[in-house]
Amino acid sequence: MARFREVRNDRRVRPALRLLRPTLAAWGLALLARHLLGCSGDVRANDAPDAEPPALVEPFAVASHAAAVVIPAAFHAATAERRVVTLSAVGDCTLGDDVGSERAKGSFHRVVDDSGGDLARPFSLVKAELDKDDLTIANLEGTLTTAGCPDDPKFRFRGRPEFARMLARGGVELVTLANNHSEDCGLRGLEETKASLDAAGVGWFGLGKVDRRTVHGIEIVNLGYTGGRAEIRGRVARDVAREKKPDNLVVVSFHWGIESQHAATDVQVKLAHTAIDAGADLVLGHHPHVLQGIEEYKGKRVVYSLGNFVFGGNAQPGELASMIYRARFEIVDDVLEPSVEAFIPIHISGDAVQNDFRPLLAEGKEADDIRSQLDRWSTLLP
Image (cartoon, rainbow, N blue to C red):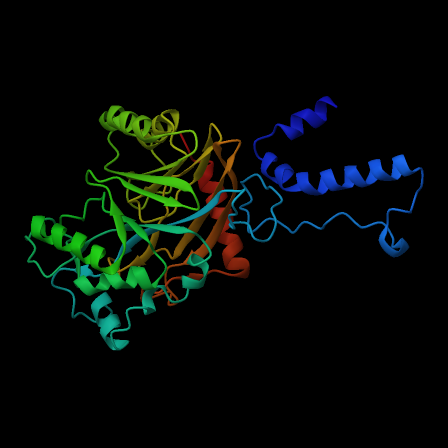
């Protein structure tokens, strides 16, 4: 009995037990009726055999490093009695090129133009997967503007304003602008980027803006921060504590870490833990342009780097491995709880040499290799 109470109270198991309560209650009533009637079969319709317990399907694509909970097939469905929300997160999306290289062979603009200006193309091979969630969050690394850009810094990413519709047509509902390329084309470029997103129906946050929305009766709050500096810990803690409620979902995105490094830094870990200590339910990271590990801290997940996704910033990337990170949350006894997560391996290009800016799902051994790499990088945390 003590072991049963331990399992019953396990945060990871409680959602599955809640789903079984109606069935267990029905079995109990049937057994009680049979006992009171003093018979062993009279309560069965047409003397049919006893019904078998309902079958439960396997969890959906749970990463090897994550605790698995058996969940029914409609894992993200919400009802009047059960509030559930499913999020997906993807990495750096640069919908353009370094200023001055737009007409170069293999550039993002050239690929778009050669496709006949098909704005649905970049996300077309992953859209079906992104449509399975309730909200997809990405990092928009660059500007969508016609504004001129200064000569400094070295890399200045710019795409056409209409490229914002690529996100909407690809199943991305929300982006963070909290990164080091949002102001590549100055204040005018930033404001036109915001206006382009607004016109396309894509939400944005960061740079002082908080995104608040309600999905299936659950308030979702997104906060974004540029840079991985330890001195912002106090601000992060105050912001998260101000937004967090027992029954809402607070997601914090950081643009941090060292480019091309799979190992998270000590400062990244401190910032992530600060956010979770203050009440954050999920921490997402960008900037290294490669995958970094995933950590569980106080029952919450930290995804240190989501890598690249539709990334026009590099026409010949050295690494293709990336992922879609997915997490499901639900309200249990008026408190938000994580219930299951999935790690969906992808390649950012179908061409291993020349980036075609069209991510696709990895399969078979390639998918297994990416999962193994993620497990290994998760052991590199300070």
